[in-house]
Amino acid sequence: MRKILVGIKRVIDYNVRVRVRPDGSGVVTEGIKMSANPFDSIALEEALRLRERGEADEIVAVSVGPTESQQQLRDALAMGADRAILAKTDGPLEPPAIARALLKLVERESPRLVILGKQAIDDDCNQTGQMLAALWDRPQATFASKLQIEGETARVTREVDAGLETIEVDLPAVVTTDLRLNEPRYIKLPDIMKAKKKPLEVVELASLGIEAAPQLKTLKFEAPPQRQKGIMVKDAAELVAALKQRGLA
Image (tube, rainbow, N blue to C red; front, side, top):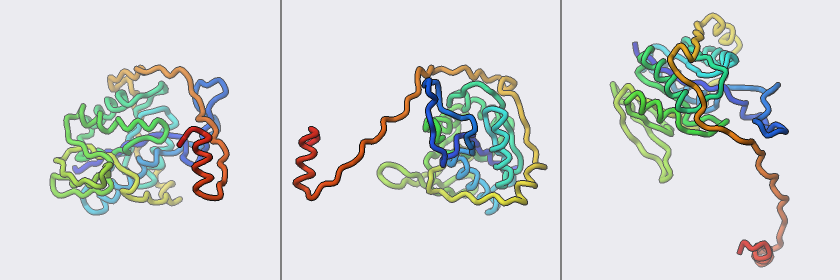
């Protein structure tokens, strides 16, 4: 079966203003709207389009995280995924542990393609896809802005510093999605109701043999300094004078 595995991460919704706790121990999450990572929604949309073009038979949405991540997986099922798997853990997670957990699910599911968001908007690590490809010993194509399947090859247009780069990788492979790959579809109410009947499997992360102990210790969280109010200048000469006064010119 031609199967696509798509990673979904639970994050603070991108429309929510993130606030640091007063004691600096983390960010406020109580009563905050949580959503699927936007880049992961793009990954799922691309998998759905591949299935609609006849390039896939089944889409499996997977997540590694707390019990609450089932909500984001249900949204993925409502969007069109066939089934979902949650590797449940309540502890802190870092990219190496997530990549190893995904590898276990890949070994179990044997997908033709794994599509992940290029990064998560909460930590911006941009590491999990690359780590999974290395552990799986399969090709990777990151920052994809266009994806085409041609037989047993994926043709991927990547966004790089110099512009666009097109590469071909043999399948199975790992692809990570960039912002301009597509625009995810809206979830309709009937699809939300249908998603309740789709299978969502929950497995303990420990049962996969994964040790999720963090390798990094965060000492303190701090909000960025508040931006200073700008000033208006009449002409270029006044701008140069203001920059010199501040030691910037």
